[in-house]
Length: 242
Image (cartoon, rainbow, N blue to C red; front, side, top):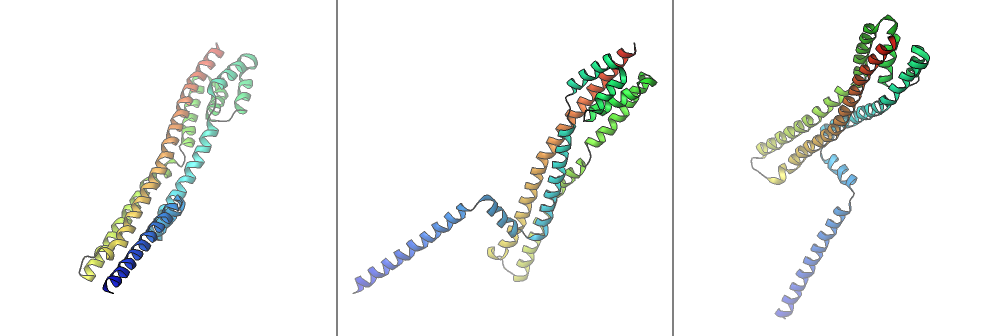
């Protein structure tokens, strides 16, 4: 009888262990089957609405500024070589007014600079050059509009994350001081919130930094194009005046 009871107990323990292992495996499979967005959503909720909401707002506003700038810069990009040839042909065939008409029908800062230079050519080459330089500065300001906000969001997002981390750690130590003993389960939630805010702040900054670098590179490309085109325009006007 004792042997039978021992065998039954061992079998019961084996069944319970198998059931527990199976449940753990099912839970792991369920966690693995979750999509990236679902896991991200859960982690975001666990991070707390206070700082996570502000970090999310920084991400949304930063993306809005980045998308607006990218659209504007792509529309501002002009085939300057083609425009230069068209303006040169128009100057040779129809004079200044024909060249101005070409610039009016072309979008972008390069065409606008060409138009300003052509509009002042009757006052002399020096006046045209001053107009080109002055209007080039105006166009650069338009290209860089709102980019400073994007850099601000890049700086603020990780700072907010670190602030959430500090506040979470302070709350954890306050609980330790109140209870009087160190328990991992007591402070695990506060530490998790602290780390999650830092992670999401850094993720936000990384995403916005990629867009920022692309925008800056695009602006530099357009500005270089504007400078080369300005020099080419002055040369064309000088040759036309001879």
